[in-house]
Amino acid sequence: MNIAIWSDTFPPQVNGVASVARDLAAALADAGHRVAVFSVVDDEREAGTVEGSYAIHKIPALSVPKFIYSGGQLAFAVTPSPAALRALKKFKPDIIHSHTPFVAGWHAVIGKKLLRVPIVGTHHTFFDDYLKHIKLDYAWGRNFSWKIMTAYYNRMDAVTSPSRALAAALQEHGLSVPLHVVPNPANTELFTPVDPAAKQELKQRYGLGKQAIVYMGRTSYEKDIDQAIEAFSLAAKELPDATLMIVGDGPERKRLEALAREKSPDGRIIFTGMLRGEALRDALAANDLFLTASRSENMPVSVIEAMAAGLPVAAVRAKGMPEIVSHGENGLLAEPGRPDLLARIIVQLFSSPDDLAAKAAASRKIAERYSRASIARATAELYEKIIAEHRGKRKNAGGSSPKKVR
Image 1 (cartoon, rainbow, N blue to C red):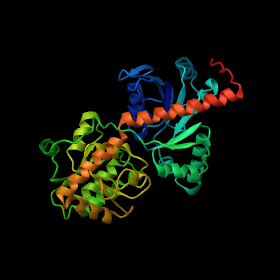
Image 2: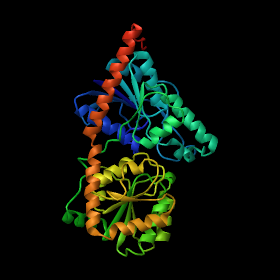
Image 3: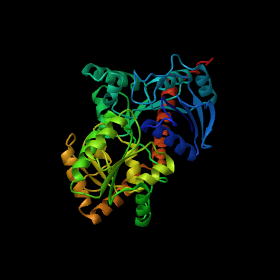
């Protein structure tokens, strides 16, 4: 198949949607499909190849000022890109896959209409949890956000969601097109467990304690990292050799560093900043437990990567998290907004080394379900079904020729 992927975010930007779009593009290309990515990318790439497996086409855009959006990198285009649409026509896609409902997403809709090919859209997250970044965190803002999302995704031939929780929310807010749950892929080849000797060596490299705990992700308000720090500080009273490593960067980092100094003046909370590739792999492998207090997660790739590295998970029971963390099997879940309860399960997890090891093995086994190859295979099967249905509808309608793209 010829598969055109459109996304408003793509590496080198660092976020879950960018990672999913990249991993899916690479996995589909590795499976033998022709893949072209069309995205707002903030480097000098125009068109070419990435990792030798898929083409990438840049959509010209303007950056959003930080005083408007403080959540990280964001860009927008004022008008559709004729060059990108010409490249799409030349590529001759069998299907278009949109990962975002913004600039690139609307390009994808235009491409569908011009070329008369089917389009599938993936809704990745609970966007209303991020409205504080654009000063719209009010009831009317949340309602308006859902109306925009469902209006966009109702233009698709089908929609996918990484979690059942988000799928249910979409339907509750008016989604009327076919909906499929397709989990996010993760690089289970890069992130793997290490043996005890290698883990000890990595702990020494990073200066970690006997009970090494890690959080990895954006340091932003919706991740509730302040509650994770509070939970760690409470648990550390019973775990005198525990450390907390916070991997990532974002608008809340300075405030969180100050909070960490207040809660742990002995320096047991370590901030590494942004890590990628092998450096990130090693940082995760050096730890014994993944910790998150976030109440906004849909299906976070960061947690799946940590599970792939063989880490049990201490998290909160909210939104999509219970779908990847099985309470009692590969981790424990606490009620959201209760750092004291989260601290209690951290202590409980470290109370039995054998049980912790069993949960570590279970994490790896569960993570393998989300390998890039298996998710790409499921996605390709869905594409084939949508393409067949689209061709059937066009045949019954008598068919028509694509419009000319100038």
